[in-house]
Image (spheres, rainbow, N blue to C red):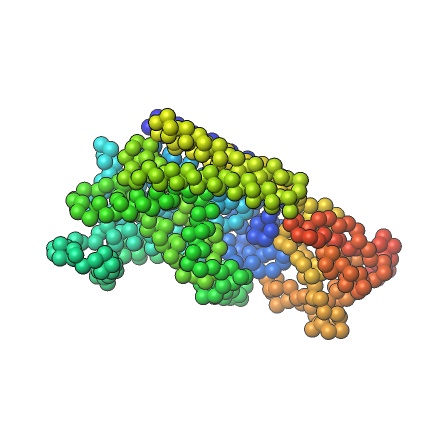
Length: 620
């Protein structure tokens, strides 16, 4: 118990530094962060908690749970960047502790500690933890569900793993069942049906494998080749009788009732209040559309997610060569294991592989691909990696040491590439921040430290040294690096000049962050002249519902309704805009456009025009 307390203290310290340090010191990054943060701000300002609204339009891409969380943070901390990201960091801390709890039950406290550290110092998980997106919420819900499943199914007695109830591979206690489906219901409110379907598929596949009866004539399959044997086993795993028996053991009726009780009320309310628009756009557009076609040019082949994980799980991904080889060797050595014994390492490996496999295969099949889609399997990757490292440190690994040497070579090479690539990138895009490239020296120095530990036969130093290196790299990158890069985000120099009672429109370009920092909706103007516009009068102001997409009026129509309105554009459209604006409009302020060879320009009326319009309004 004392050891566990110290481990929790260490993990809370790591989480605080990695997730919360300088969390609110940068502007929101386009485009998803401002959309989510702005949606919560608009819902809070309107005093309504049902219909997601951003830029005075329906935001149908995500369910409501993230917005509720951000709204609660705004109530505590005010509407700012820290509040928008607070719950992502807080729930990432919860995921870290859930990973530790899950791994501790299966594998013991030492592996659990390093698994949680590996998770909290992997790049893509830290991105989710420090961003105002639903990824951290979804990961937390799925990991908690799987943690409750493990705690309710397995127990440790005298250092050995056993089933809580003999022959039961799903929790027998009603409270654990309720806990699992409670978290999956929240997952549906966080990201939609995938919050329920994928964790269920992970647990279900694991149970199908573990409860598969052994054939009496198992020896007859020998000599028929590994491919035939694999196919036969797959067919047996998904045999209808075995599948239905396993599904029934997962208490599907109880699960369906609980998930629907948690998620369905909001889906019904938002459907009613938007005339069915949210339901149609969310389920058909976002889910069916992303599964069947590549949206927003987010495509990739079968290689996409292996590469995404290799980069996203860095620096710990350098060990994936020896981890994969170790899993293959352990799999071959378990063919003749006794059926009445449970090995924590084997059970853990099977569950983690189901966790990773379901996530990767599902999104590989889907046509729209993004690196963040597979981040929910990072806790499983962390457990597998920590298992290998601890086995290697205790000289119990079946993998040849040359593979560990190759992993160290990969770490050194990655550090060198960061130094070289970072130097070139910062010289091109961030000339004042060339020091960022020196972050690559941290993996290089870590690799040197590991080589020294091996040379001195200090294998027990390996996991601590690598953990410290990963921690320093992530703190340097996210705690300091993003702040330095964020200083180049100068759009607020322009946006803070916009008065709250002045209508604003954009011409040619509109970024989500402009809406958030302007603190009000922004019209997106049509580039067609007034004579060619579809609106001949002020009918563009009328919408069928408050959630509907705003019409795109011409510049002339906008100014006829808002004669002192402000216009946001970029240098690329400035000349065209100036030709069409009245003579008493001019550039009020301009600033750099982040990572682009252009500038953001705010154009507005002269004081004389403002005074004239005010006088005319007072007369009327």
